[in-house]
Amino acid sequence: MSTYLITGANRGIGLELVRQLKDRGEDVIATCRSTSPELNSLSVRVETNVDITSGDSVVRLRDNLNDTRVDVMIQNAGISEFNSLSSLDPGSIVHQFKVNALSPLCCVQTMLSKLNKSAKIALISSRMGSIEDNSSGGSYGYRMSKVALCMAGKSLSVDLKQRGISVAILHPGLVSTRMTGFTSNGIQPKESVKGLIQRIDELTLENSGTFWHSNGEILPW
Image (cartoon, rainbow, N blue to C red; front, side, top):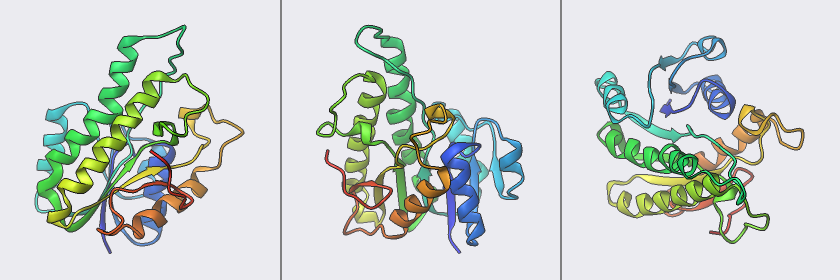
């Protein structure tokens, strides 16, 4: 049994990660700004009032763990706000950078002392963070923030290798959740998370820093 810490765990992909990991017997610490009945029903440790954009909030989380050590940290919390060229909103773009890229990096840095040797870190990014794969344009804030998260993940994979910590950068697929407006074109969270967990299970120091689709495809930068 390993200990998993998951951010943004009260709904969507985060909630399904908690559910599947709990079902296979893992010890799960679910963090969120506010919990949900669905999360509470899973009978895992829930840490509320955790806002990854707040340094003080993350420090409190770290301190609340006391002697608990984390084997796998999944940075899932994120937001998506649409920005087209004709409706560019610099404030929205900066906010997405803060939530989607800077805060996960700072959260990892703060929590390093709680990670076991040979721990794993998974950053939930997006295929929209691929420059080469961008054929439709738009979504400036979301795309730019996810590119930044991918770069943070790659640097972390280099900087943490000597500590024995490996890093995966993961695209969950187009998933039907509230973030995507429950799109009919998306896969269900259950299918996405099954793939995400498989990628994390297969993560090693040798393949650390890879940008994967949940289905196992290696994505272009």
